[in-house]
Length: 323
Ligand code: PAF
Image (cartoon, rainbow, N blue to C red; front, side, top):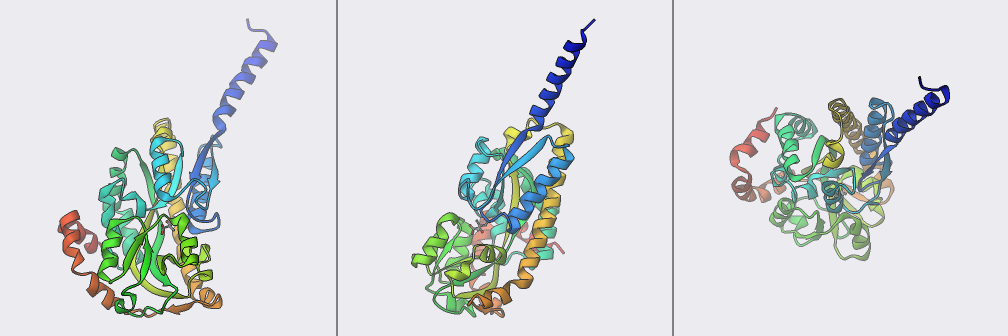
């Protein structure tokens, strides 16, 4: 029979074994502050995972590009040197080409439409496409509808954007769209953008309101036009090296946690949008709220032939048809 001291030791070792497992700390990176929409989504995700796995999985937060730009983070997730990232589709399409369809300008009517598509069969199918590329897409989160800021002039219609040198994401679909507005698209990784705006290497950039607020772009940009020219989905991605070790129950916890994070992140996008114009005007920005959207739509219309060739007219129509 086992002596009492041995029993205590064995129990201790078992507990140690269990607590070693409980110490699994996942690195999660994103390109904006901890208090931004990305940060709030990431924190909500991690709290849910912690709760749902009884503390066996915890996170270490790496906001503000601490693990690199979005392209680098996606690569690291593929390689397993980073566990999680909350990233926009801007860079993701370079890894999973099918995803690029959602980056088509003026594809989505509004937030309701975009969220319905991303959470519905079309979006879920796109999440699954990531698996073959060594990326586990847990759930669609959100960056928001994108708007143009610049240091040169107020943009009321597409004509006013002509000739501006604008930083875009490293995303061919966005760049094609911008060319139709007569803009000179200048792809650049996000971590370099603030300095480029400050130094005048580019005249402007385009991003959703939460990014403009969180990164204090009002310090380096005078004009904001609410162009809503493209919806920018984001996604919580996990490394297969973590996913493949999870039990089925834990996989469910991670997926549900990501869905809950999306709700939090999207709410932050809405909250930021409701205060942004007043805040940015207070910070000295000139804001054009009523942009001539029709002029932008008309300019981009010819590019739809190319998009249809690349993605399939039926696939574009299927997204547009979602009510
Ligand atoms: O413009 C970008 O690169 C992206 O919108 C950003 C700011 C990295 C957030 O996903």
